[in-house]
Length: 173
Image (cartoon, rainbow, N blue to C red; front, top):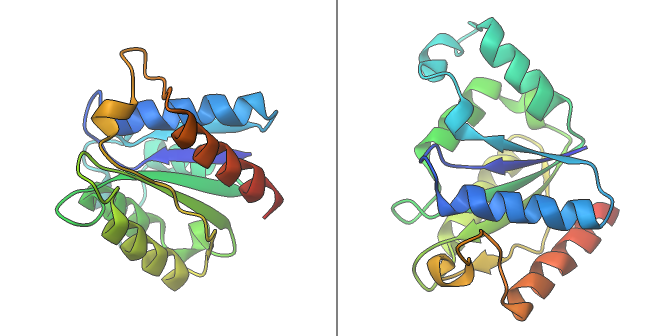
């Protein structure tokens, strides 16, 4: 099972649309997957699920999306030159026990031209610190608002090929 994490809690974000499109590509390759939308996190999760505390709702989510996955794909938007704080808070609550020894692929999305290049490097450092293995191919999708059509589909053949290549290689990783 691969969990695709949309690394923002912004409602109706382009990031969740990319995550759903990525899920369709995985399904086409017959790879079992699920999408974790951080909009579904409990509103107070970072206060009630840290420093040894845990709620049942959060524990069930983590069991389903994190512990139940063999691999992760993190689709991360660029927030202030990095990745969203909500994702860092999630990782702080989970800790290394949740992701250590697992394999992670990263996809950056941004409205600008760099496709969240710095955020991908920051996420790589975070996952290495947590003892996860980060896949080397990290597509950076620039001007994401121009890549997605009104149905949430990426039609640009070069971008689709880039994601398909990552998927084929990550499945073997």
